[in-house]
Length: 167
Image (cartoon, rainbow, N blue to C red):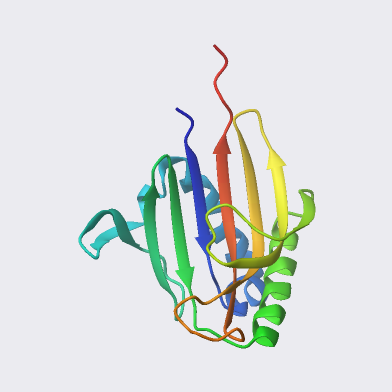
């Protein structure tokens, strides 16, 4: 069975735009840990579910979890909700930061992304290797916990999808 590992990490502007070298190191670490289901970042169980746990990441003002979704795993960190303008500006900074870390990856505009609930739009950077497809997306999403169309969040996601093994 194919395994899909999805990482969703919603960040404030600071981690990717202001501290570029550290952000590129963080992104590299997260992509390296994706094939194991983010095992090195797994913390205590959340809500009594064996499929959901805290994520051990040192990001300011973020609540992070890892969730097993059948064959997929996601790591999600959500920051405070803001306005559409704040989220849009944050997404642009995230996209610029990711682009600086992954300058030779192919880029395209997206309207949705795997494993990201409520995504509205983003910019996706993709690289295909012999073993996997890796996609990093800076996005804007709704905050489903806040009942307002003006409540938005920005962040980035990493999708690591292994290629099928030849028979």
